[in-house]
Amino acid sequence: MTASDRGVLPRPPALHRWLVLLFVSLAMFGNYYIYDALNPVIDLLREQRGFSYRQIGMLSTAYNVAALLVLLAGGYIIDRWGTKQAITVFAVICLLAAALTAATPHFETILAGRFLLGLGAEPLIVAATTVLAKWFKGKELSFAFGINLSVSRLGSASADWSTSFASPLYTNWQDPLWLATAVAGISVSAALLYWMMERRAEGRFDLGTTGKTDKLELKGLYSFSASYWYIIALCVVFYATVFPFRTFAIDYFQQAHGLDREAAGILSSLLPVAAIFATPLFGLWVDRVGRRSLFMAVGSLVMLPLFLMVTYLPPGPDVSVSIPFIGGAQVPLTLLLVILLLGGVFSLIPAVMWPSVAYIVDARRLGSAYALMTFCQQMGWAVVPLVVGVLNDRFQAGPENPAGYTAGMWFYTALASLGLLFAYLLWRTESGPGGHGLERLTIRSASADG
Ligand SMILES: C[C@H](NC(=O)[C@@H](N)CCCCN)C(=O)O
Image (cartoon, rainbow, N blue to C red; front, side, top):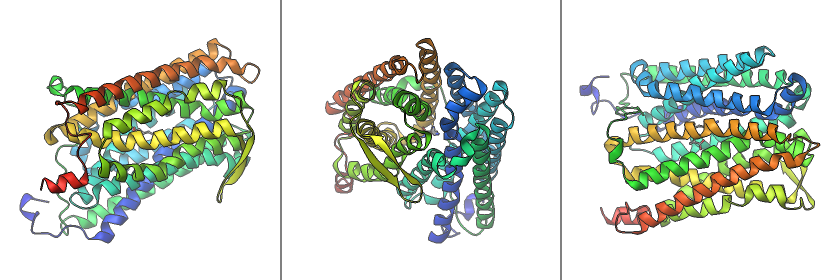
């Protein structure tokens, strides 16, 4: 579309926008499913393939290393190819990655599969965000982002639930990963449907321009404020704690707490399930009351004792948890409480943290600010699974020695305490004269300001 078409053509009608949201969200559903499909087969990879925890950690890290490489070019590729090609190509890469991960029993091939997944999955997220910005700008953009993230989390939860609805597959490590490959087919189909929609819309509707996509521009980083860097630091330690904990959680519940795979899967799924519902609600709440840095500090404080609670507190009585259409399980009360609290934190902090950047960074540099944030997030997230894997091996963690997992839990706790420190520093800065309005600005104050 030429610049002169804009303003002449109408904006896309609501039905088209919601169909776009449906297709993009389905693509993201598959993306998150494939990533999390590895978690429930960790015990099988250890038993049937003899993998160490360090090797499991390397499978996780390979994804991040690839993501770090591709994120440097992700925005450029999307700008050059256009969103419809980019989203489809990245979805196809995810499909190939899922197939490669399932195809052979060799560690190197599985590692290559996870590396390839990092090359496809992270830029697919950037492309999906760009598509939403294109179609929803000036409309229900935040709501569309929220729905998209909730459907993505449903993908994570579904991978955990596969231990119940696809339990016959879990006699070997490979079949659940072939199922993930089939789910990747949903992503590719959804991306192709989006391609057709965008092609039909070209020349009929004004899809606007999204400006520059999230390119990483290193020049001028020094001019970001202290508040921005505190948010980056919190983002790094927060995701470096939660994502690796999720990677190992099903195996940990099985080995250290004696849960069977179905129960461990259902328990682990409560983390993304809580986030599906609570993230948009926290977003709405914070938009009304402000206090963003205080909320991040409270979330960090709640997270601090959780890893020590699962380690040292008695398990308590078993309670029933049931997920409609999936199944039910008996799980120890302490584990249930910890996962629900972590689910609350996993909803609160992302709901507040990502939008907060928009308040403290100039709009013209928002793309670079988010790209840098994702880049730093990947670096922290790359290191931690490896460290936890090495600690689990070093302390011979396993069903005969549940205490072997304790060092890893202390490591998560150390990261969580750093998170609390950064959140506190952010709150202190934002409560003073150098604040950017994170504490103050609400929907009401914004409309009063005109
Ligand atoms: C919004 C945020 N997304 C990310 O952090 C992505 N860079 C990586 C997600 C990968 C999930 N398997 C989130 O999910 O909170």
